[in-house]
Amino acid sequence: MKVAARNGSIGQANTDPVAPPHRRDSRLASSGAGMVTVPQDGRSARSPSASPLRGRTRTATPSATVGHVQQESPTTATYRRGEQVFAPGTGEGLVYIIRSGCIRLYKTLADGRSINVGLLGPNTIFAQEDRSDGLATGATAEAIVASTLSIVAAGDLAKLISASPDLASAVVAGMTRRLTDLQTLVEHLLVRDTSVRLSVTLLNLASKFGRPAKDGLEEITLPLTHQGLANMIGSNRVTVTRKLLELQRDGAVKSLGRNILAVDVGRLQAYASGSGPADRSSHDQNGSDPTAP
Image 1 (cartoon, one colour):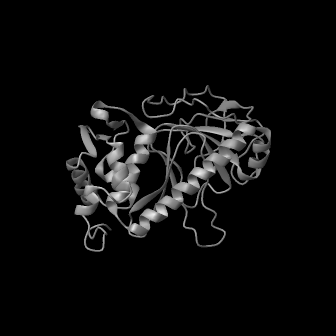
Image 2 (tube, rainbow, N blue to C red):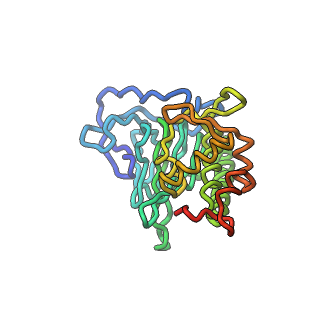
Image 3 (cartoon, rainbow, N blue to C red):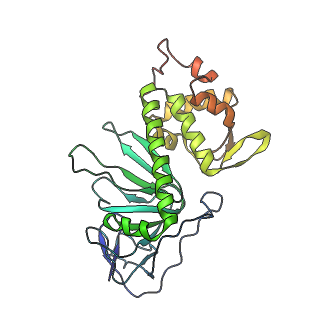
């Protein structure tokens, strides 16, 4: 019997007792409420120590193989915070369904910077780029909190959708969200404004990891370093630090210590639309941030 490795390779299963799933921080990962049902009839398996999935807990059917081989049911895998699901050149031919947690999908630019193309939550479907046209460079998917994914061969997705109306509905809703996110990303990249990209990212994080805080603010429970935020928006740490200070002076962001931020959603929405005070004060005459990469 074989099971899926996180990068699309195939690892050998054994009959060792299954390691307990990695615990999730209930503040950071979704509780799974309203989770769609993915048809699955499998048993737990764990890769041997030689596998790149050391300690990974997942479910695989006795007849299922993943990679370039068709499988009958999904494989379930858990990823710790910071672990990669796939990188450029891996993960092709597979479809990933987020069961819980959050996945950061990003592109690495030629100069080494990275930029998010999606912060994906439960019931969202994603996949590696199709490089058949020779133009796509591939993306990286990384768990930003402990996450559980269902993994299925792309050729089997249609059968799963036909067997689960809930899954079909989730696919449509998820693809609609992804399309909206990508169109918004293109718009913000054309504006070339670091304040806008940073504000949109903070709003996105607040919607996924927020909880009410004092003074009507929303606390983002996911720890965020300035470098981490820079990696999300294709900027650098110095620029992000300066922009955060501007947002703090305008009351849109408040530091709660230990890399925890609280945000004023209304003020950030104004910045995201290009009408906030920080937006007007930090632009040159053409309305762009001359220090942004």
